Image: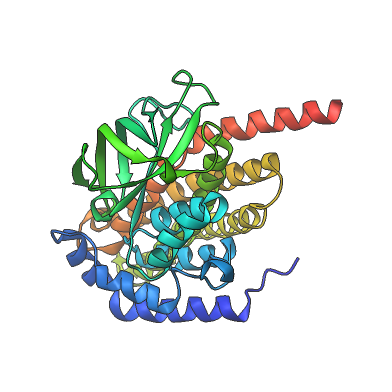
Length: 385
């Protein structure tokens, strides 16, 4: 199988790498993360000018005709620089809903603004009691004439402090854990009845608790079929999961590289610690974890357009590998750096924090191991029939 990137993908990667090297160095990122806003809208505009926000969309939708591989290339570079701007919530999630299920009117209203960097979205799907089950919803949307009335609470909505629109999952019928009766809505964040509590996350991003109290949403903001949105949500979350795995690839590579460089400089007993065989073995193990994570992420990216079971199994397998590998690389990097690794002034601690948080996004190792096991059982049952 050919794993070479196209000329366009290589150009995007190289252009983005140069931009981040020049304008997203570690000290600059620290200042941005510590600022009141926590991000740089002007950097988001530069991403738009580079075509990054248009890359995964079809030419018919105003994009560059790319797809998941383009997002993977971009997210790996973002992972190397620990970029905090909301690419996954806006482009992969909101853009994915519009691309796969948006009406012509919704695409016309939102996609051009997204691609131009003028509109930022957050994906409000997680709930306090929902764990990682996408169908475990207590937020409700009741039909009221030509609109819906939204009530509920969404937790840890990444990027919501920067967003002007939300993509919200809500129950239009059924009980809390029913798989039917789930719908998706596009909601303006400044709508009457929406309140937020904003806060920084441990890995340098921003999130919100979002509360809906009798929020009126026009029926035209329904995305996809009413009450039948769970398969669509699962697909979008799988695409977001793979994009996040690609981000982890980039972060793991830098954490390993910085650890190797540090081991050549740090001396103990008059000898660089990189000369100690036991540490050499540990850094080789870090390298192997990184390489395996790359392979699994590539595989999952290529299987996103296959049948549902194949896609889900590939995504879960990659997320397990990323969760385990990212935690191992991050912890080993901290161990080899010693106490310095946990200081805010040293970059490796920030990579450790991001890799640790990635394990818990869109389902942790335990969740995806259970999902893979369940899907493998379904495969075996189908084969037996």
